[in-house]
Image 1: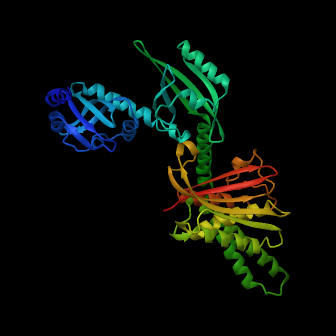
Image 2: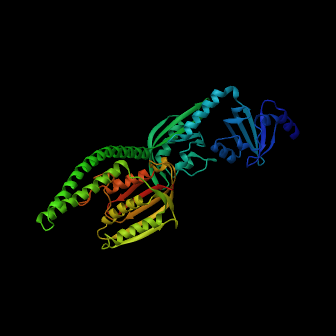
Image 3: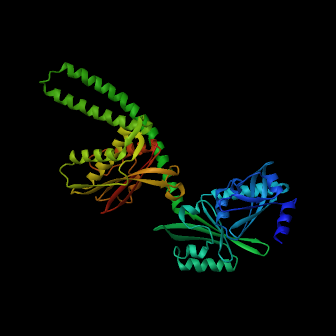
Length: 456
């Protein structure tokens, strides 16, 4: 019997067959398979990483329509795989005559897989058959035998589960909102349930849109738009101010030459000259916001830099405050490529603000760690990837929720002394480094600034 089956497979002129092991190594293939593909490893045929994983995880039957690079070029094939006796038996049917359908299917699957909203497709028994890429930003579960109810059981309210089941039984769609408890966070999602009916077969698509992400993106867009507008204003103001100051400083210098140092007017002129110098310094700071400072990047030891900068500030202008310094460095050495002087300026600005928020003393924590940023999960306007995170935490009075969104705006300050330029410059510097600054704060508890910088 076994020989008859193998003989049928071998001589079948219409379908390509092969048998392969867990690692994809092909241990048997018929003539048509060899003519179509000429490969020794099955996984070399398939480009989609998620499909490779699904095949490796299947212990039953797997079927999929995909585009395969055959000897004759890219062509659609319907793959049917059966797992038996620790081997994978694969049949590949040529769908070249239905190329348009196959390419259309692939196009829509690609769109669904890469969409920035979560899509979960499941059947009447709540067994999940498809999730898109963003699903893995929120959940760590593997797809093998994953059930929707077991996935949601401890993450949503029972009312939502009951409502979802009722709509599935009545084949009604849902348009609602739900809070999911994911990784110790409460996240608000807009929920849509769509019924997919194909003859007698019923499937459902649960679509979850992260509303916190929408709000954060809108907030960042507003911040960036406001910052861009302010750049144009500060650019014009600083140029005009520089022209006026140049005339003032020149005339004051000439007046000093004509007045004896012993004259009563001399001290007033000196004070005016000093005031003009301070105004010129402020004008240069405005220009640094509007145009950005030129960067001289080099490899720097970031732990050493922030420790020495913070220590210098605490022992200098805040030596009389009872502030305890705590360090939390994930690694002994973190090397990044950045402008050393500009990063020192950012740390100086934030540490100075932290110390000013603790006039009666407190704890100042500085730390560094490596983090993985995922755009759709972390809500940051920077590319996904690995970043160095510098955090500076104080136990001061905190920042009011009413003003926290304005603290990076030029000239916004709550201090009696100060011009509100420091954090604006810090924001500009980190942005020019392709990074991001974030802050969390609680009144009476303190504030933590997070600085995210790429490693190169």
